[in-house]
Amino acid sequence: MRGCASSRLVVGLDGRSGAGKSTIARAIAATSDLDIAVITGDDFYSGGTNEQWDRRTVDEKLASVIDWRAQRTVLSDLRESGIAEWHPFDFDHPDWADPAARTSMPLTRIRHGDLTVLEGAYSCRPELHDVLDLKVLVDVSLGERRQRLAGRDGSAYLDDWEQRWLASENHYFSEVMPPERFNLIIDARG
Image (cartoon, rainbow, N blue to C red):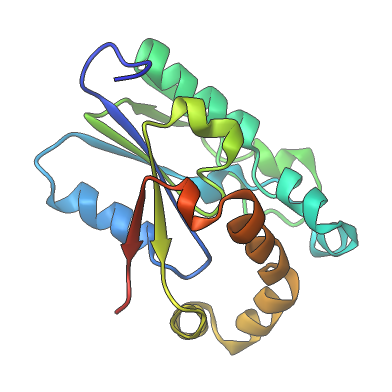
């Protein structure tokens, strides 16, 4: 395998909000006999406050929503040494624009499993292709995703999500990473 000294596999599990990426990653880790390391993409949030986000263009949102450079470092460290560390973003921090929101949480440390899964929206962005062995898209209809998001976070969140996030996800999954750029598509309908 490319970049691996052994049979270790690095998978990007991408998809729109509410598609079921986290659920699938947890299920794989819980039911497999393999040693599986799961990296949560939301740990690398870097989009700032709602006010900062709302002022950005779609391209600026894609460039800044997730710190893909930090994700790249984690995946590269896993490939090179078998161990990686990072501080997850603190979603409970009072000021998301404060750099401390990205460093105040305890350090997460993992070792490379037989399978390492980077799960989250934007986890298969082109800047990570050379450190991913497999790019997987989790696909679900907008109606089902809306239902899941409303059930998980409430209808007020759903309205806010659509205003803030839908345009950047649409751009990413139609222009940057359309379905044909993935190695595998999972239909995750309930």
